[in-house]
Length: 387
Image (cartoon, one colour):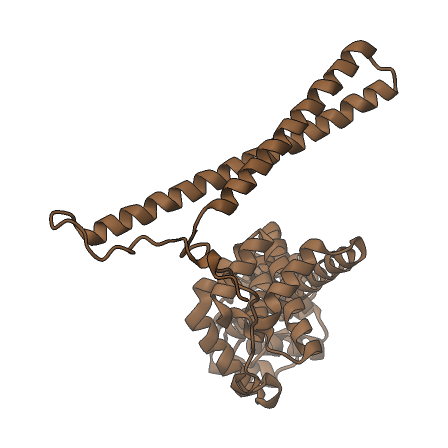
């Protein structure tokens, strides 16, 4: 026969249909429920306090027994202390038993009448989005841009988190972040931080990036949605053996080294592009770089351009062989270091040496190209930075 006696006494806040007309019935039910909840909370606090006292007393008893075995101290006092603590232990056990009986005699209510038997999460694989491997590179790039534009604030929040439990809860609350795009964004962010010389922040974001990558790797191995692997990863990394944690930390260090290398490559590329832009802006009418042409000139001709002395330049040109003088003059014209008028240019190309290039009646027009000496110094400085 089934025993239904357990169902006789059930405490329910709203089990009275009729109350006094002057009493607000909903408020009465709410107060009763609140009073019951407070009683249950007080009982739980008492149980927790009793448990802590038991643990503390057991530890003290073990320490005292150890001193007695080592003859450390007054033996009579140690024996008396042990007897007192054992009596106190017996009293606590009796108090715990009384509390358990009292709790068992209490009527059930809506908060204690049932407890969840088990919890189960089912992932609908058919609802999983199209795998990224099936997308083209252009589509992947567009998806990443849209993803960053939509969730950049949440991505930065995740990247700045420090505790595993916080990261776990945040990813479970923002399940849309558990994907390959998040890992890609964190990689890009790490490179930018390293280029800005924010090394400590880069190392922290790199840790979060590797956590996300581990989650994605687990999902690929199990062939499940990565959102289902968040809890298992964070539980494992916190309870992992020394070998697993060592492998995890080594992966982070290797990732940071790759980030440093990539950031250096990007900086060098940016410097080269900047130098090329400056070089293109300096090119003369003939397409030559005045800095390169100036550095290729003989030292005597370089000094002429630095002091801007035309007479001195003419004398230096006269000392050179005609073919060499004509070559240097043409390169200076093509780079913009030397800007003659039409008659002078014609004479320079048809004459032999510097004597045919200029006459007493027609002086060539000399123009220094955009601060040649200063530009030369800037180019040298940038070259040192690259090295």
